[in-house]
Image 1 (cartoon, rainbow, N blue to C red):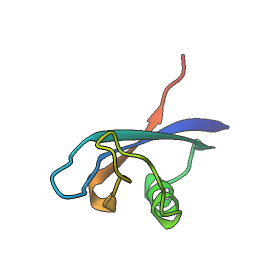
Image 2 (tube, rainbow, N blue to C red):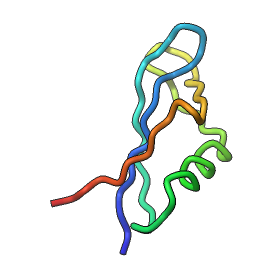
Image 3 (cartoon, one colour):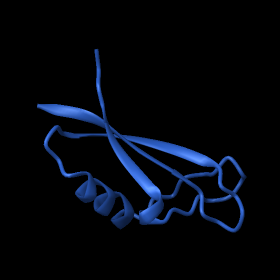
Image 4 (spheres, rainbow, N blue to C red):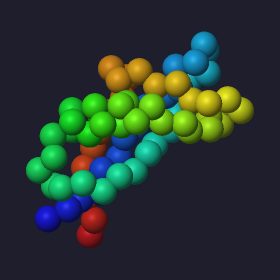
Length: 69
């Protein structure tokens, strides 16, 4: 079975700190660390709310499986 996952963190560019959430669809038993590894390996290009490309650090991101009711 598959689940929706949320990757959440703040932009680490200088003193920005604006929060971002990215959503993905993976197997329910997927290890959150592998989701982060894949996300960071993609070198995501996400426009930050601060008007620049968001910069993320793996140790400042969280991954949560979302429950759909």
